[in-house]
Amino acid sequence: MNVVVEYTGVLDIKAVPNGGALDLPPGATVSALLEQLGIDPAHRKFITPLVNNAKAKHSAILSEGDRVYLLLPVGGG
Image (tube, one colour):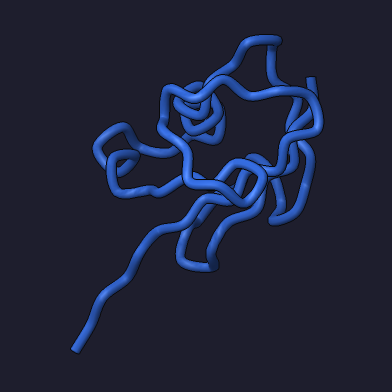
């Protein structure tokens, strides 16, 4: 199944361009998506996934055509 992956500029993802489609096996979760993108396991807990514009858990099961936005909140002062 194909999902569209979008992310903030601070994430350095080489597996798919921002706004590109990624092929995943049926029943894949957000966590599996992060793994396939090569995101370090220690960093995954800081990423807030939005699936079709709604906040989702890393255990959320994805469906064909879903749009997944990976948000990495950044703070500063």
